[in-house]
Image (cartoon, rainbow over all chains, first blue to last red; front, top):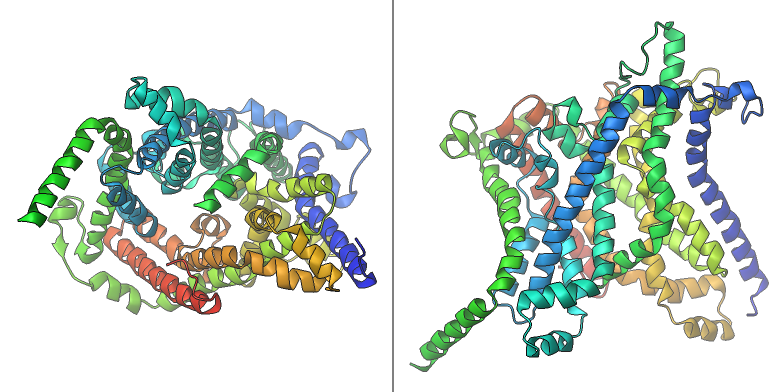
Length: 291
Length: 311
């Protein structure tokens, strides 16, 4: 294409700016990664170091010698997996039901769900319900209240609607039951949407801390994000991480290292995995915007 | 007689449908039950804002007190401060956070090589997958007096700035860290919309002598307008429902003068101090303002967007 001189100049500026933006986004992540392997403050005083004595695995050693972060990791895995199974199942079932155009009461059901997008009882009344159900300090307080996602139901419904009706008709003529049709014909065709919903659900729950903070008191039950909050925000270093008698200044330095290492341990798994799933996320956004 | 007969036969038809397709109703039942328990019962529970809730008597048994808790809040000395903090934090966030993803998408759209574009997007989306706890933790680490930002600043200044204990910097920290984490991901929907622009439009405009800026202004931006309108209404409607989770994490005892917003106040007064009725009233006050904002912004956008709004 014949771009004018001004246009080419503009494109150049655009590319340079994008380069700077990429650096700004990347720099903090790289800094954390390096800082987790370097002796405290080496990065600040010397910059990147080639000196072998400046490198250490002390932060990671301390994290693994204490069970708190690992336990949080497995708690999160349990919560996120259970949540994903429950919310995807409920949304797909409801979405399929609502995708039937002739469903009697379809409109009423939709209004029933949509109202909850605009109105809710608020923090305290929801807390009271969960408390009265005896769900405090159980996994159910994390899994059930958020299992209903109107957005997920709409995504699933939109997907099911796009499946040609003739498929169902043909199966019906062959004598399949409604449930049989759902199980044998619809579900196998729905792997992409189930995958997208599962990804969204899992990552959302993995990164959540707020519900756990409200509904769980027992430290044994804390998910990873809540353990991280105590380390990163409240500056509570877990007892098993620093058992030896250390001078105050030394203690400060080590807790700094532990912070950087725990950020890496908590974030790296998702950051490594997400590029493989990127196209599915984009698909999810597209289906959602078509609504 | 005829209309009645129609109604009866319609009803009969519907009952037949339900009987024949009862399985469809079984499939939707779990969603309905969960919604009733965790969404509708709490909505009923919100009536405690108009009662003096006593745990012994429960929601139903507690005594009605009308608007007592609302007036207590409105007349309390810190009302104006908390209210303005909420409004300022979220409207500044909207003003800065809303246009950046659009600009980013327009910039990305100029990249010719698909592979380069993919890789840049890969980097820009990454912070979205980091939890808000970790991002807040990074903010504390980077901005601490001994942290890297101060290491750079002390080249120009004599002593480090303690950002996290300074009320004046709370809003900038909150908004900028939010932009860092979310702008890339938020651009995804605009990038998708721009991918639908017919390349022939651009070619034709170029032949007619339109410059790049002119083409962006007359082709790309009008394409994005409907998406922008919807997202803006949704964002503005959520102004008072601002991301409480990060504000709470970034709050320190020193930056309270600017960091205390209605949701953090509700949490502290309600769950930490056990003031259930009062905190619920504050929450309802917040929600009502939100609905008004949503309606107001919808009207404004309708005017600007040739009658197309969300509602």
